[in-house]
Length: 171
Image (cartoon, rainbow, N blue to C red; front, side, top):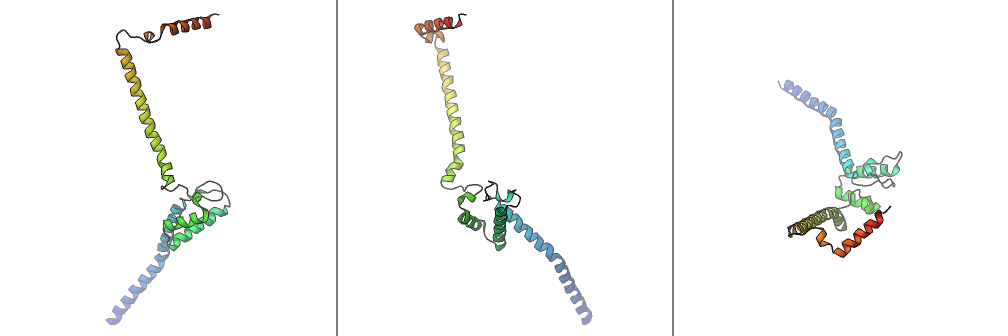
């Protein structure tokens, strides 16, 4: 009975080893795909430095060695397990701040990010203020008893404008 038990145990262990050997490439392939996806995500935050003004992962120049080497650096850093911040710092040290596809939201860049919203808000407030003021002005003119648009213009200016219109329309 022990030999039968031992044979079953050996067959079970060998079966598990065979299954794990069969599935290990699939597991490592999946881990590689996750690293590649992370590398694409990190690489999407940088500009290609070949001068094309495109995002690193979208540089479409045929034979662009710059994007290929930069992507290789990102892949290696991701494979080492470097954090996104560390990879970013390495690229900024190597290429400068022009490597950012999107400027960081801090310091003067934060002001640049906020200005469009500030301009939109200020413009909206200004337009509302002007409209309210015009409406109050029209209401006060209409509310004056016996007041009309002609009575607010001095008679001398009105006569001069009529004379000018008569001269301009003579033909």
